[in-house]
Amino acid sequence: MLTQLVHTQNLNNSEILALLRRANALLCQETAPLNLRAKNIVALFFENSTRTIASFQSAAARLQAHFSVFNVQKSSTSKGESLLDTLHNIEAMGVDLIIARHHHSSSAPYFAKHLKCAFINAGSGTLSHPTQALLDLLTLYNHFKGALEGKRIAIVGDIKNSRVANSNMELLPRFGMQVILVAPPHFLPPTSLPTTHSLQEALQEVDVVMGLRTQTERHSLQTYGSLKDYAKDFCLRRAMLGDRQIPLLHPGPVHRNIDIEDALLDDPRCLVLEQVKLGVFLRMALMEGLLTS
Ligand code: NCD
Image 1 (tube, rainbow, N blue to C red):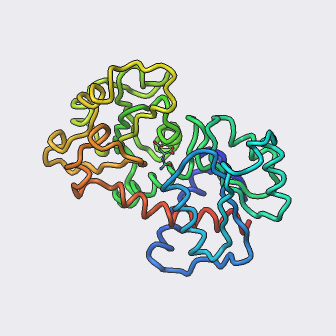
Image 2: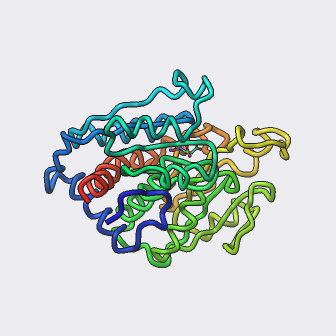
């Protein structure tokens, strides 16, 4: 059984479906969560986080596990200690699970390779964010009552720099979803998936839309005039959806009126907070699996 989640490819489709079912059972309180009181979890975040770290913390609390957040900013990494030494020292204190986020895309496989304890990638550079993609899948699975086959999803925004997009582009097609990438040319990665620069056109064709944040901290060269210019063409607006029942996802943090306009964030079709809610149960199910295998 899996003990390290580096990317979505670590889980096959039947393992993922079992995870979604378990998350839903926990959500509906059909069964009690496992009691992981004896387990020691450490979060090691080298990059900022609001939702992901709080979600893991909330999930761990519901499993009664001990959860601590290692203060990277105040650690000896600033005194020249190597990443690997920091990691090994934390592990030596008797940790059962390390949850890590780092700005380098290759950080997660590196951490997993050097750790003996269980490991979850909570976001590595621009490459992967498996638990976000899994909670997005759970949100879609529940919304469409399991009927994902043939559903078309537009992923809109800074796709090239988004680990959320990358993980979803791997995961969603495995469950029969058709992904269309919508972005200006400089935000599109090399891909075999269909792409368009026209948000209006894409919205006519899809069943669901996922907005993304413009990852300004990852741009070495600003290739667009301003975020306002970008928003003119790519901000998701309520008027664009008309009365179509198209659900809207976004991993957060949302740049209001750049990624999505205020009015659409308040619209019942917006599932952003549903994603956040479901994320806790998805992470509970995942931690149960990793810590009892
Ligand atoms: C994302 C991340 O950090 O990758 N947020 C999240 O985890 N929910 C998306 C982002 O930062 O844009």
